[in-house]
Structures are given as structure tokens and as C-alpha cells.
Length: 570
Image (cartoon, rainbow, N blue to C red):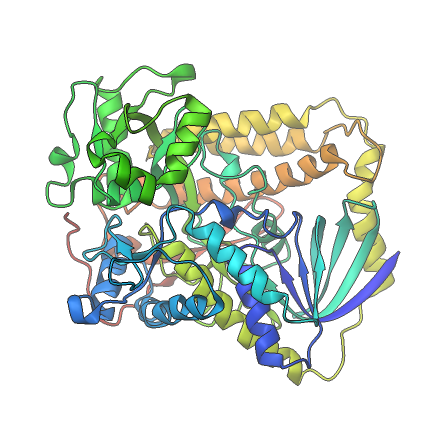
């Protein structure tokens, strides 16, 4: 069994992970040994799929302001966002845009040469900074390129971390399985930043990559860290039918229409002021309402849809501002948006919840921080505005990178880990080879996705959530009897899938339990049986703690500094 050491470990190589590692390297000035551990190769993280833009206040002289961005974010969150965190977010985001500019990102430009911005849902000013419709890819590439300057950063590509080791209330290290060699090893470290992204692969129809299985959140949860506000799952209004591939909100920001089977721009009925650029929860509910009331188009496997019409934008604008969307639709569904509308419906897209952290991204365990979608700081509350996610990854990637690096520099010695603990983790990982159960892990995963799509989607009811919770508990029991047919250690995708399914089941149970307890309608948590927001009883964050019987729920207040909750209209 190999053992290695690093001062600081960054778990995850998406936007938040790369930004954290980069800031830690800059802060430490060569004093720290930093590791990035990722189950994929760098530049294969899901962040490259972010398309439309990154929100930041860049036009004070044209009428935008930090307070306006903060207000849009708080109102969009249905008043569940912590307002001190929101103000820090809007203050830091423009600095990240300029920093990326200095590192060489090819931002799209206005005719006068200044950085371009476009409209996004829920924003009252055009503040989504863009690089065509490949913003996440270019941000990732810029961070990756800049990281090459720092020799003290070691990469562990295609290594799956199996556990976070905590002893005596502080971080000790992680155990990992090298997919390329089959080796099991331990990494001791002084500090950890968890930046592993979301878990939307528990849904069948989703915009997310196959790797988005919530590994960091699930490991933190089982290690004793609470998860916050997990019942709030965002559905993006425009997932491409039938694949679920993201069709960026930038399509609507550039002026695209949503049209039902009767040829109507139906958003007039639901958000007459903002129309297609209303917040995502409102647009998604509007689409599903149209479909349920018979004004959608029939789709495959029950995936009825509405149309996203870009034809009026013209060839030049589509090719300049939305070239990847045109490429995707031509290659995947053989539709050219210059001539035909695109079939879309809401798809699982983002977790507003995550590992409970404070305004600096610090968890309740000494030496552990979290950033990006894996964390809940809480900036997004009950509903995230488009283009705020990539900005959050950059802002709290920087913050956690700096904080964790300074913490690691203060620690005199690396912590020790008992060999018995490491052997236990290795036996837990490869012990499944010796189980000869009759359950099929892929059938379990498919059934989980079916249940989540049916009962935990855009609209929810108490009866549906109860049914889903019982089914998830049954699936967790079945998962104890999975048979791993492949007994090798190198690139064992059966074993990897089994680990991911365990994580998805644990997180799904937290989502459903939290949603069942929250008897109100707030943001993306749309309870048909409780159709009103209840600020008297539910203006609070949910915390979920792991127990053998299932999640134990607790609650903490929302931080309100400037704006009291009001009715949310668009």
C-alpha cells in the first residue's frame, strides 16, 4: 500500500478546483506542496460544459450596480440566500473577470473592444460575461494553462477518492484508488478543499455529464459533515430532447422565443415582464404546465416538449453568439436552428444545496473547505440565477484556495493516520469482489433515475415524495447485494459505477427527506400540496446529518442584512 503526502489536497478539477489550486499556489509562493486529485483527466471535468456566461457587474457607468446584482440574486433565490454571502459574491465576481482577462481568456467583445455581456434569466441588467457559448471551456482552459507555471502542483488524474479521513475533529487525509494502475493509496495532508461538483446523474433526464455523481458531497456526509438545503434542485428550462444536453440560457438571453404547439409565446401568461428571461424555476414550471395541459409536442419515451425558436435571430447572430448550440443541434438531433425550432423541456441541472460551509467556504471540520457546486455557502438559496454558478466557482475557488493555503502554512507537521484505518478502507473498497449477490447495479441506477424523474422533478407532492423515499430506502437495501462481475482493479468500471450509485442513493435520500419535511412552495421546491411560500415557518436552511437509519434534519436561520422577503414577481 502506497502512502504519499501533500500539504494541501484539492479534490476535484473543475472551475472551483482549478481556481482553488491556482490561488493556493500563488498564496504559498512555493512553500506548499499541492495536489489536485480528480477521477477524470484535467479538462474533462463537467465545468467545460458551462456555456452561456459568468455574471459580474462590469458597467457601473451604464446603470448596473453591485446592489442591483445582489438584489436580483436574493430575489431569485426566493429569499433563502444568505445576504452577507451574496454581497461578498457580487463584490468579488468582477475581479475574477478581470483576473481571467489578465491570464488571457478570449472573452467575446463589443464593437468598441470592451468585454461583451448579455441578458440572462432573472438579471435586471445584461451582466453575463461570455466567450461565445463556450464560456466554461475557455475559463477552464485559461486556468489550466496558468496552472502550468506552478511546479509545486501535482496532478492525480483518473484517481477516485474513496474516503475522507477525519480523526479527533480534524482532517488527516484521503484514500484513493488509481484507476489506471489499480493501486490503492493514502494521501496525508494538512488541508483539503472539496470541489467535486453536483450529482444530477441521479435523474434520468439531465444536462449533466456521466461523471456528476456527487462523490465529494456523499463522502463528506458520511464522514459527519452536514449537507445544507439539498431539497433545492434546479431544472434548466432547455434540455435538448431526447438527450438532455444543455441548450444554454444564452439562447433566450439573445432573444430566443419559447413556443407551444399552438404557436404561442406562452411565457406571456406566466412572467409578462421578463418573458423568456424570467428565472429558471418559473420558466421550467411554465413549460411543464403547458405540456401537462396539452399544449406541448409529443416526444419519445414520454419526453413531451416545447419549442425554442431562434430563427428570427438570423444566421449571423446565431453563428457569432451561439455557434456551439448550432453545432450540437445539427449533430445530435439533425436540426439547424437557423431554419427549425429546437425541441426542449426542463432537465435536472444544478444543486443549490451542498456541503454546509461558512462565508469563507470552511466546513465544521478543522482543515476542510468546500467550493463550487459541492458547497452551499448559501448564495443561491432556493433558486440559482443563470451565470451565477461559474462566478461562484471562481469567487470561492479563490477564497478557499487562499484560506486553506494560509492554514496549511501554519501547520508544523503532517497528521498521522493509523494503518488499521487504511486497511479498513481498502477492504471496504475491494471487499465487494467477494460478494456474490444477485442485484444488478445498473438496474438499481436506472430505477433511481425513474423515481427521481417521476416524483422529485419540477413539481412535487407529499405523496410522491413519500413514495420516492420508500423506494430509495428499498434501493439502498438492494445495493447491499450488488454483484461486481469484473474482478480486476484496473479501469474497473463496474466497481466505479457501484461506488457512484451508493453516493447517488445517499444524496437522493437527503433530497427527498428534506423536501418532504419542507411543507411550502419556495423557488425550485414546488410543492403542489403546499402552494404558498411560508416565511413564518420555513425561512430557514435545512441541515442533514448522516445516521445509519437515514438523514437527521436540523435547521439554521437565513442571514438577512438588507432585504426582507416580499412577493416574488417578474
